[in-house]
Amino acid sequence: MRFIATMQQIFGVIFIIAGAFTCLGIITAIIGIPQIIAGLKIFKSVSAFS
Image 1 (cartoon, rainbow, N blue to C red):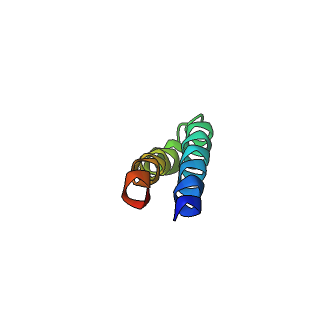
Image 2 (cartoon, rainbow, N blue to C red):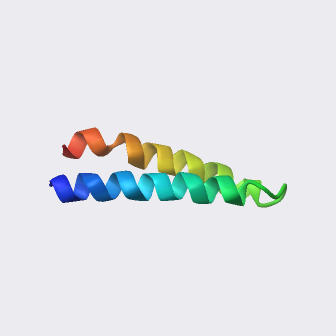
C-alpha cells in the first residue's frame, strides 16, 4: 500500500504541473483548471492509503 501512496503523490504532482502548462492558453484553460483540481484531489487522497 505504501507504493500506491507514493505513486499517487507523484501522479498528483504531475497532473498539477501539466494542468499549469495547459492553462497558459486562454482556450486551453478549460481543460487545465479541472486537471489541476484533479491533481490536488489525487495528492490529498494519499493519507487514505498510508
